Image (cartoon, rainbow, N blue to C red; front, side, top):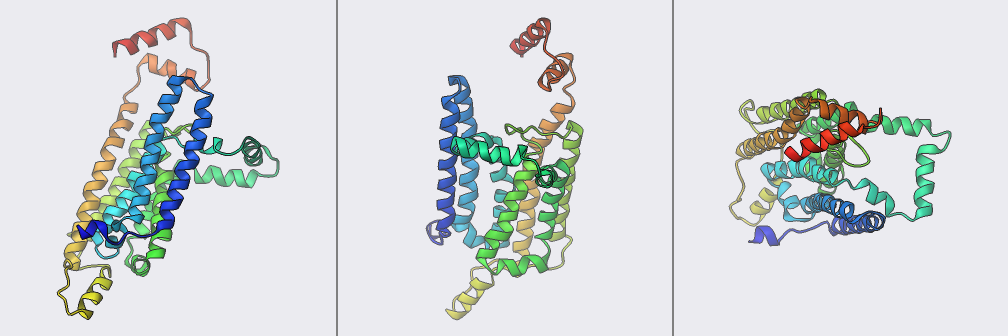
Length: 313
């Protein structure tokens, strides 16, 4: 039980998480006050996903998971998957952008949006934003972050300092995860711009990278790569106690297995959704897609046909 009740820390992260949730909630109430009851209920249900993502990300740092991730590589891999995959995916699925913008006062909101999108002389800022949110940058950045932090000469120095571990490593995990999932999960007002085939390719590529990392850490390795858990060994030696640690190589292999299994676990559902988009080529869906893209208006006959097909489904 001590593993769960001891070693809580980083209260500032918990405070920031509460403030972020409160900010989203304020904006959500403003938006829902202008919406129909049905739209408000749907938006509320989506926001629970965003709140779950914030809570998962905060608990990954505030809870004892952070302390034990500095001592065991396999716990670090659980934290890695949680912060880089689970928390960002939940947050993006909650479509938090519009409530977050509406949390600002009206005058501030309009001034900010005009400054970003309409003010002349900001082409460089807009070009940078377009590059950062582009699918190519997001997918490459996600994989580069994942690979670079697995290099021992980069991993070991940061794992010796909790503040660096949280701010640099976990921070880059979460940001890259957000940019990555924006390319696959619709999150109003943004829609993924990748074609279904490109989504399948990007998911398979990322899963292959994770699999190669897991293989390199497990049966392709002849020994441990990382200096992790040294503080626990030092404390045990000082107190003349038997250290309760795993063999470093076994610890690394367990962590590799977690990355391998969790990599498949997150990839397959997203891959199934992408494949469903690839195979969705019936006439009604094509007509609906053209209407949603603003190319033309839907005719009465198409609307009736689309509604009848929805009823059958």
